[in-house]
Length: 250
Image 1 (cartoon, rainbow, N blue to C red):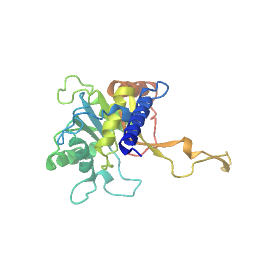
Image 2: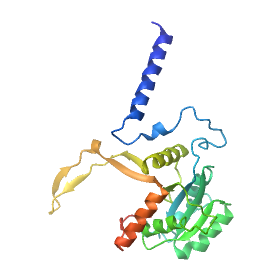
Image 3: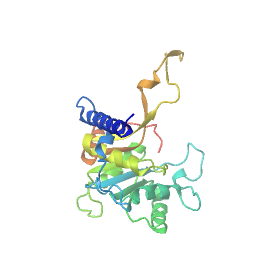
Image 4: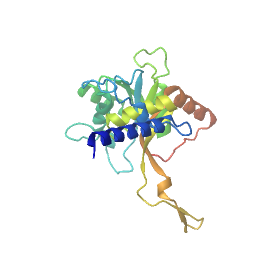
């Protein structure tokens, strides 16, 4: 058996499958197609070669910790003498292609957040006040980029929205979400459903179970073209004073 020939055939088949997956016009583009395999990415600045447009992040951090029964909001709880939110900020700040991180906090925690920024030498952070709900807090974070007179917060091409209490986010995932958002307008992390999801009758009896293979759980981070997501929040604010996700925690 000619091993060299077999390997060449396998490589050719793999390349054809990749091209078919990336060229299909009847479904959204696979984010994996957006990462050039031969991109020149230096060891100290990964992602810079493929992200040549401004990217920013919004971290809603206005939660009170009430659901967990904490006296201190969980984003400000210390782990190894460092607040949790500082780890999350670091996960974004370490990426050279992310130019700004807007942290949205409750008014009462504004000074505390500024102290964290100074103490841990966060250099890309802008702190803004949140709203009464997570939805309004995200809107306030997005609005921070709309002030054309503030040169310290330039409007990004793509904005990533992420939970302030989730520091374990990998660069590869952020890169894929960023590039997919630029290409498609919006993108996000998903995972297969593990738990059984059921629908009930009005009397709270089991009606049917969803086929888990057809569904995915939506998670953070999520990426958007800035103009699209900001306009969507603006329209929502004009239409109603209710929030899109009033029960979603921060």
